[in-house]
Amino acid sequence: MSASAAVAVEVGLGERAYDILIGPGLLSRAGAEMSRRLPGRRAAVVTDTNVAAAHLNALKAGLLESGIEPAVITLPPGEKTKSFAHLEEVVDGVLAAKLERGDVVIALGGGVIGDLAGFAAGIVRRGMNFVQIPTSLLAQVDSSVGGKTGINSARGKNLVGVFHQPKLVLADTGVLDTLPIREFRAGYAELAKYGLIDRPEFFAWLEKNWASVFAGGSERVEAIAEACRAKADVVARDEFETGDRALLNLGHTFGHALEAATRYDGARLVHGEGVAIGMALAHRFSSRLNLASPDTAARVEAHLNTVGLPWRMADIPGELPDADALLGFITQDKKVSRGALTFILTRGIGEAFIARDVPASEVLSFLRENHPSATESRSGRQGSRPDRQGGRPDRQESRPK
Image (tube, rainbow, N blue to C red; front, top):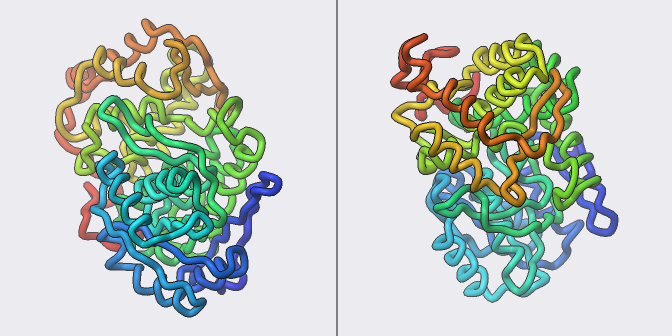
């Protein structure tokens, strides 16, 4: 598939509608695609050191061909970059480059860079144009689409931010070949999420075709496009998450609590892994509440295990805070409204729903039952992530296989 034949998915927001282009070779065409939609603009590129080493030159060449000379702001990689200090650094960099309100902030990177750069674009000069060029699978299927931006607080994940929609998303599937296998797997959790929410046929397709998605080619493009269609449909209906957009948080309430509990230490847990464990917990919790069959939770856990993702709290290396502390992180989550616990639960594969006023006592009992301190007597405490599909992911691996 050539870049000119890239799949296009529209996010239908009336006058603010924008395209998601999906396919290989889009990085070098970024300047041309931007010029068609935002002619004559200057730009700042926000990226991190890892992504810059792999992809910045290709992007800059494409921008320069279209007469766009970017100012580059390079940050450290990792979840801890989503902070007030680095937000200030990006804002100052954009202002130092003397960019105007009509100019463009480009996010070149994964979800961390996209969220941070988008937040900066949303507040500098009361709102600048924004283009997402996601370089991780997780960002291509989730965080780059829909306009959620923000940074973390010591009190929880993504608690400070704004809704600020991009003008364009360029999902170059070729850049995913350079991802460490662990990062690719983490992004795959978000792919599976869309099937588990309301597309059971897509989840069944992934169960059969996941290896081809990992290998690349047309199946990878097809899977990413389907995920983007699913998210675009929800965003068009509920841009500001006042209704069923909350369904996209399947697995995230548990997952965000686990990320906060590990202090956003990427060596222990990255976001997509937290979502994977969170989705497994959400299905198991649904079974505990007699909302879904135990077979549903077992099927979800089996697929996550097959692709090499963690699916239980015991898979997180190191010690976790106790169940009471985990519940404390959950109550700080932005999905809690006036103290009432809200979870995305399920009645089966593809039958997710918003459950409000979930009793905290039920959540606490469930967390105690599934905490590693409780499971060690039954199955043995896992000191590190157990072997799956070739063992513990090694950050030196460069290509998903």
